Image (cartoon, rainbow, N blue to C red):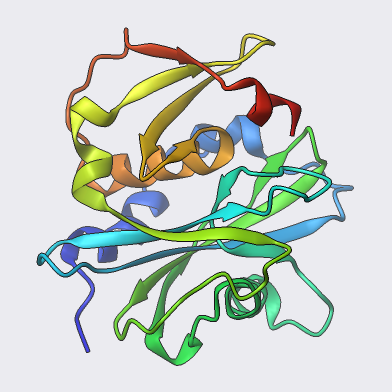
Length: 214
């Protein structure tokens, strides 16, 4: 069993110290009823650092096909809130053994206006990693553990231009094109953790057409 790194344990306090305006653009409206949760699961990598668990969604799904995401999904009535939903979805999608996970914090819920969905990120530490795989072959195409050192490496950073003018953080690692909500969550988490390194924000790439259409 491994201990969570100090940078991860420090995130809840840094979130608490943020100006409420930091999340203004993602504040859920009072009448929002569609709720989901995602598991941002960090764990030890074989080289002594840390990694994060990402999935590539099934390519035949009706929405967000082929997109990179965290394990997660809708909060059902029988779930123990957002934490229960995130862990259940991770079990169903990638075969995660929840006994190996320590929940570090429940981050503020974020409103995604395109889907009218309120998403609550659950920050977790994988103290006892177990085998994971595409347990739900319809929902998940691939399961990948991406090193944190690769995420903070300035050479791997760029901005993504979309057809409607929205600009997103981006990475392309292990054959995965990470952008949008998932990339924004990763970017903010790295900043709050104090791991961010200066990178050239003039480096921009267009969003691959197949990801925009999905």
